[in-house]
Image (cartoon, rainbow, N blue to C red; front, side, top):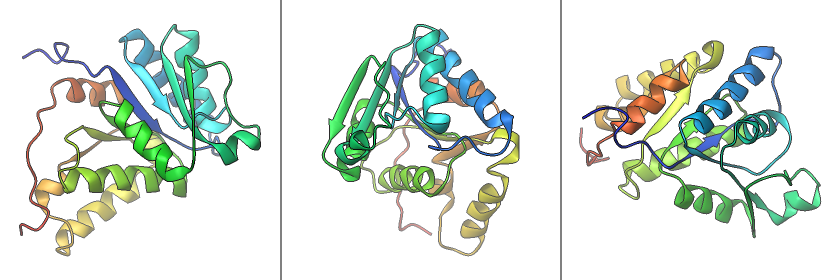
Length: 196
């Protein structure tokens, strides 16, 4: 099967509400937004206009892509919502935000971000472990940002807290295009979280 035969319709991108200290973070976020639009893949994200969230959304919009934001009411009031989107879903709270983003998406990518980005990523990874979805997950390792996290994930395997099939649920690459190609070829494999 060609990697282009079954591309995802929409990808959820988790990323920082800050831009980080290096220009590369914004550059790669913009490149991802453009890439998604060029491939005809819709972007689902946290709905903010700030940080890498705003960068990836603006780039996708500028390239003619579909961009769907999901933001809780309390962040709307803080006036950080992006108002130029294809769709903006305003939800009750952070829990509903994550559930809605997952429901709207066919896969998940994480750009650099902080605690919130990791929390979102780890939740959908846990859901995959538990069989609650079979969608692909990936970390875009921009400039080595996730290198230490990748090493810690291997440490979890080595120490017996994460089995290898669960480890293989998440892909890590510095090139978002490589991850999207793997998403197009993704075939769900059942994982037994409790298997050794």
